[in-house]
Length: 123
Image (tube, rainbow, N blue to C red; front, side, top):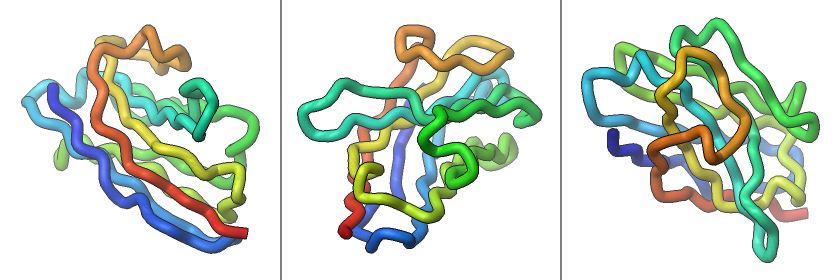
């Protein structure tokens, strides 16, 4: 599986961005998908995850109520809608795919990673 993330950019605090992650391969619908982020000088952290069907999602506390993860299995794409962005959301965002039917929150549980897309939120 190859993953290509896009949609990052510069936005003012309070604004919105939608990240997309396009996956290759015909087995996309069998993978759990996740978004992680890494801020400068910090470790990569979990942001959101969605199970194979899209029925189950889970978020880190700091983004609950502001971010929404979704997927379109027909388009082999997972999305991260980010609203009410804050400067502390500034990071490189990575999408990941894992061989699991249920959602996963740990980076080591994912098998495939895309190149990141940079999100910068100005105050």
